[in-house]
Length: 192
View 1 (cartoon, rainbow, N blue to C red):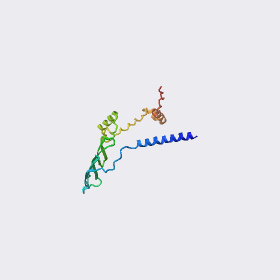
View 2: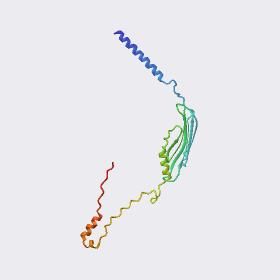
View 3: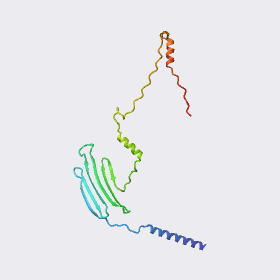
View 4: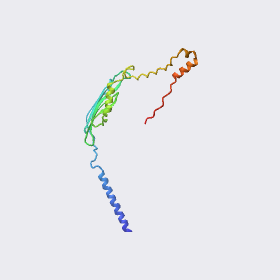
């Protein structure tokens, strides 16, 4: 029994040593810098009475940002819109330089940058349809773009002309007229 306890103790000690080595390997070897990153450049103008402004900065770790803006349609109620355009750049952890330019206005935030995903291309058949639609805009309501006219109603069936003898007997004329206007449908044909 003493041998069994000793084996378990050695296994536990080995397991503990292995876990400790794995934890040391998992921790980063480089300690994060606690020194402050210097601001190399900083400029700030505004907000001015007309709504315009401009700012920019650059840091010691190569972060650059700048923006300028103004109030579009100033004084026109319901038409005023703040407009801004700018850019920023930094180095990603993998060393890639990320640069983004943007416009922000009444149409929203519109970024552009090589790192941003792009939509897939439009399939050729859909592009042809879009081109056709663009080349054939809808015409006015009486033109070619309007809905088709309803089909004309079929002409009513006219009774056969009657002789003077038939018109003398009103029931005969009615029977003659009724026979002429009553249509019997043709039997349906089966398709095979």
